[in-house]
Length: 358
Image (cartoon, rainbow, N blue to C red):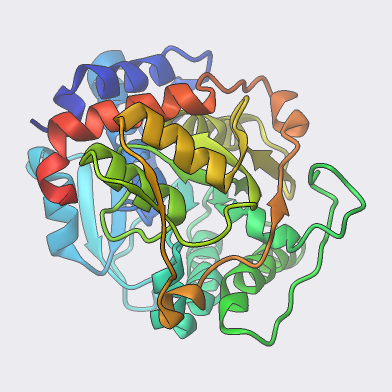
């Protein structure tokens, strides 16, 4: 079963399409997406393709990726769709000799986003968020793109200094830049600064959603984030492996809520502004997250010492809660409290992806 044939996943997409958004702005336009095969990008592409089907709005979707095989695996039912265009390109390379697409909207969703990736590819982790972004912003500037959406992260806030309960968009915490792990948060911070530079100098229109920890049935199976590992174990009815004391306190968001927020930023966000994205009733300690998934899957929680290379990619932040009031002022609301989102994720994965999880 393909994921959009799953009733729950399809319901998520249809609920997104029922939002009061100006979908007609896409008609006759083109949308470029870097990072379309990741957790957020996969759901976004599924949504856009169903938008064309259900609302009869015609536009091109240009997928920028260096991995054609992965694109074909994730979107195989759509390969013959002429509105879905595969553009083989590494965003870390200049677009100088690229095909001359003229995207009206660009989403930069490409990034290494999990601990093992940070540790194995620290250079790429930084460059995709800085050089890759620069290349896309140059392309946007040269092709009169209407708006660029740069997906940033809760990681830009660094460590909570103990002076706030939740991060709002003006907060700036501590990051030790002299660590392997720092490449991701510092890369995201530099990426945001680069956006501001292009807004000022090149007059680009850019909006910046800052995502909390995102989970859902579109997560890549190689994702080594704790929540992803917990979910894969839960799908297989295996013990949930906790590789720390579990006292980390974080905000999360289900994929449907995250992409809905992305679209609210695109349509209603203010040029140059950042917006926190986290779910309602989705703040939880890591050990309680593990226990919740153990309860859902009727398994147990086990503790394990992480491998040295793996632990190098772990977040140093012990408390990272996000204040989502700013994006709610745009009209966005989260629909999936944490437990509901987790139950939904496991149910979907068990029906369509269980054979891949093992």
